[in-house]
Image 1 (cartoon, helix red, strand yellow):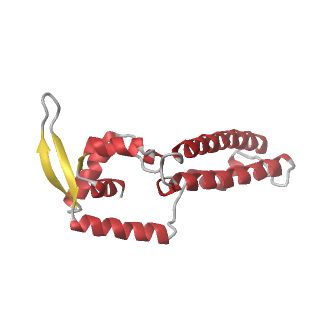
Image 2 (cartoon, rainbow, N blue to C red):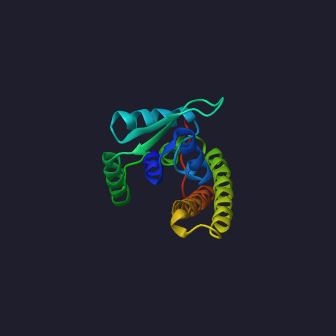
Image 3 (cartoon, rainbow, N blue to C red):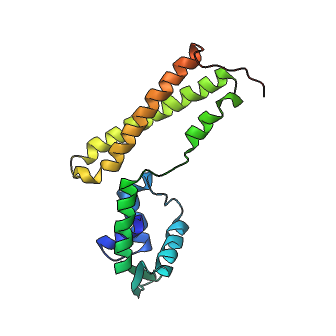
Length: 180
């Protein structure tokens, strides 16, 4: 979706796509840590007819660059994906709820200590994102910041939940016999 969106803005090469994702901080919501993942995705989009090669060029001693453009099928697919992703809650499997499901693997005091560490990290992330939002809001329209806004809201809710669970563990409202 991210790559289709970018080539929908303007034809571009893979390296530029990766640069824009990082410059726009979309790497907070799209995993492009490995450049190879971008190229694998491009190969799949080409194979599926969602993008096409516009041109291939070479500048001086630089490697050859292939510029891609969005096809009609790619535009329709992107629009359909967006409609579905915005309208339909997905069944996702993040790690934290899985860890909560098996909380009794650790002794209660150790679980509480781990949750306290998590709370500190979540609160630090909220602060960092709020600072990023404050700075970016000075020159970007809000529509370009909504995913960060969402992340802050989710992290605040997580912090509130974790804070309550820590208190329940401290007061033994939640406890278990450790047997492992």
